[in-house]
Length: 132
Image 1: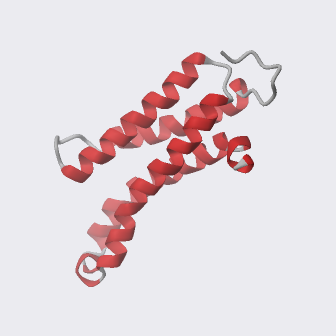
Image 2: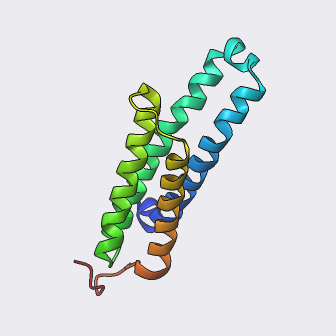
Image 3: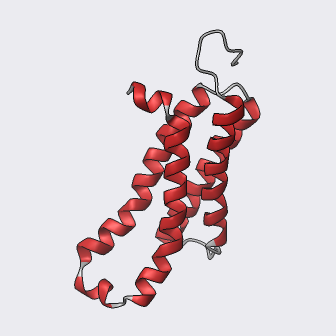
């Protein structure tokens, strides 16, 4: 658990980056290989369940990054971007609204950038830090 706490921004940036690549690759994978949809239900299930794995890992990373951040604005943005990404993924799953995929890309990249920014400028790793 200490590894996750100490490296939450690295984990969050990597998770968000991989989520972005996953979202970017999905249409190309299934459009270029339509046989995948009919041959292997396990592969398609695993590919779609990755959305929720990325969200879970990302939430844990956001939670611990917020605890170790000294910037209230970054704390709020981390949660807002995670919520935005979650809602977009849920919307995509249940097809509630027609929202361009671009917004999912923006939210995943934004979350990754926020983790990198927090790591570089707002990280507070000891008790003497002025986190609120």
